[in-house]
Image (cartoon, rainbow, N blue to C red; front, side, top):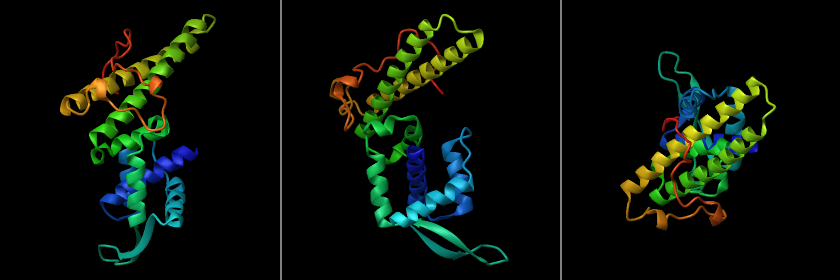
Amino acid sequence: MARKAESLEVAVLGLLHESPLHGYELRKRLNLLLGWGRLLSYGSLYPALKRLLRAGWVTEVAAESPGVSRRLRIVYQITPAGRAYFGEQITDTGPAAWEDDTFNTRFAFFSRTEADVRMRVLEGRLSRLQERLDRARHSSRAGTGDDRYLSELRRHSIEAVEREVAWLTDLINAERASSPAVLQPEQSPTGSGQDPEQITPSAAPPADATTGSTR
């Protein structure tokens, strides 16, 4: 839960980095950013904003609403300290950046990072999913007594990971093609705080990952 809260705070700071926003517009943009699979409620947004205010990363400004009413509304804007914190977070390439609760948010702001940072995060995420895929396949082989519903659930989980592995592989190859002098496989940097032996040298997907290359 803590990691989800931190990921939401980074997403809020990333959007406020572009321009000040009031609560309604911020929630709308966060829902677009997070995608259809995670609709954000005000019950999650406003506690996150309060935490950011307490930390000094966001400030409130009273602004006049457009239209006839001209009533005042609260607009949130990022502070210099918030910009610094956001910059630290999106350039962190350690294991926390590879996890389910944080990877999508980091990926959404990839355009603000350098190629080597993007590569570290993508390779870290790929290594994490390959480990997960190995465990899922082993579990599937061991589950000979499963009923058909549990077997279908295992198959669905494996195929979902295989699709993301293929998608990540395409992204890594595209990054290398766009910056060949920096991101050749033998020169690809490892993530900060990770064990280099955990990174798979090749970005190729497993031999039986035959599903599509997009999520």
